[in-house]
Structure formats: structure tokens, C-alpha cells
Length: 92
Image 1 (cartoon, rainbow, N blue to C red):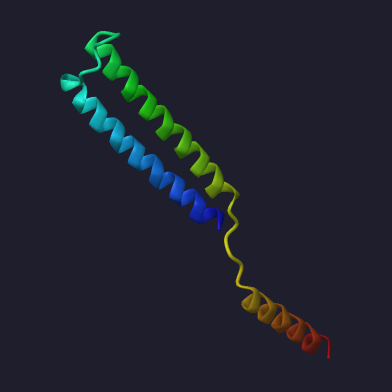
Image 2: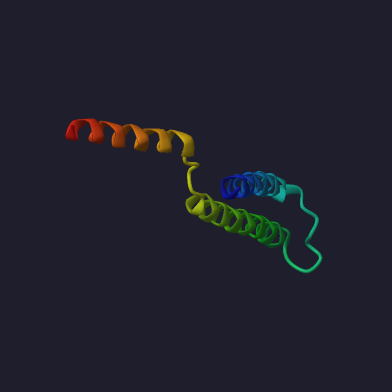
């Protein structure tokens, strides 16, 4: 479950990173120069998108690190039984 959540967050980080690249490409035509110079407004929006992508990537990586790999329970039980059987025969 954690691997799925972590993978989803990494996917979302990739989407925000792509949006950040699009915003960076659109800085030349941005129309947010009402309060700030055009280049500053576009740079701020781009930085915010990249910060969101970074936070999602770190959160996703944390989820993936905490995920435990699934254990083959039946196989482990079978191997343990085989080992016990071999030990029992070796003592005879």
C-alpha cells in the first residue's frame, strides 16, 4: 500500500515538475507585470511549482522507503518445514 502511495506521489511530483518547465518556457509571454516586473512574476511562479514538485518527491521517496517488500508466507513456511524434516532425519 505504501509503495502505491509513494509511487503516486512521485508521479504527481513529475507532473508538477513538468508544469514547472512549462511555466519556465512561458516566462517570455507572461502577463503578470501588474505588480512586479514580468520576469520576476514568472520566476516566482516557476519557483513555487518546483518547490511543490520537490516536496512531493521527498514525501513519495519517504513512503517508498517505509514500504516493506511482500513476504512469500507459504514458501517460507514450506522451507522451514523442509529444514526441520532434514534435521530430524539427520539425527536418526
